[in-house]
Length: 297
Image (cartoon, rainbow, N blue to C red):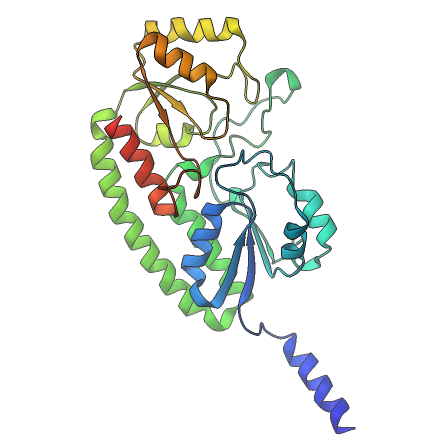
């Protein structure tokens, strides 16, 4: 009888709170890095997508399902960036705690303002996201907003450590503001500089620091350029006196290299996430490296 009571006691109180670390699954590296900085030793964080992969197209692995199955909290970018690969992982993991609408599910796009929200959605417009451009992480002003959302959700799931999470977030915010001053100072001379990018992944960053986006090498989001479109971009670069071609690490670089060589214009490969390039090994160094490549380019 005593053993039965002890078992009941353990089961009952085990459900009231978490024992050990919170198990956090992040879809992308930048999310995982922020969550780890806020949670520190109170959380165990795993990130699913590699930083040098196309964030729209991630091949699900059985290990992803296993990680999801144990998760207390799933944090996603949202804005339908994961729509092509994440839903089946959530379904197969069969973890009720991290289903959309539950406390263990956090969609970061719900906490920021998305740009380029289309008035209509059609395949004729390319791979358009109905909720807007999902690459909001590239605006460094959105990082403290994201960190606050993560802090609040960790505190909700683990209220005993709320003060700990809030203090870590306060430290993170202070460091981030110091970095922002440095980035702003270095990029001041580039306000008004015209650029062409391959894919509309850097729009938030470029808008934030006053660059002018003259066009894209993709004729439509997710659609490879045709010979005719490349010729049109060539004319645009010459006409608008574009100074940089900006390329991500995962899309084909043939067109950008061709334009760069023919027009003698600088081609810069920029990171879009933690791990996209070796120098960008955390959320701070992603922006450090973008700024360094732009200003040294």
